Length: 68
Image (cartoon, rainbow, N blue to C red; front, side):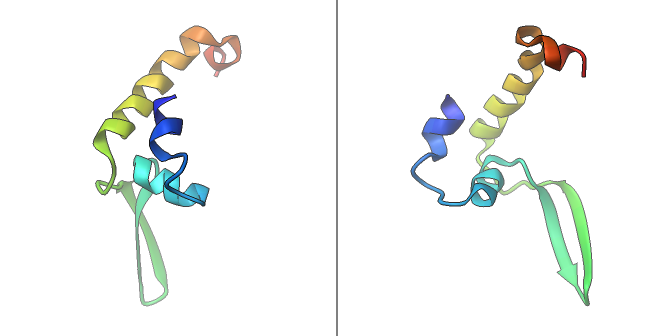
């Protein structure tokens, strides 16, 4: 719910919302080579924390996620 309220009206595209939330990796491109790094530090730290905590709790609330 926090994620939806935080970004619902802000971003027209999902990739912008993912980046803002800190769910994408750092990306660099030089001389035709692409490199992906760790999760980007350019994010909303509160929102990223909420999403990580939700992911940790999800298996306790959903049987399909427990099996994963």
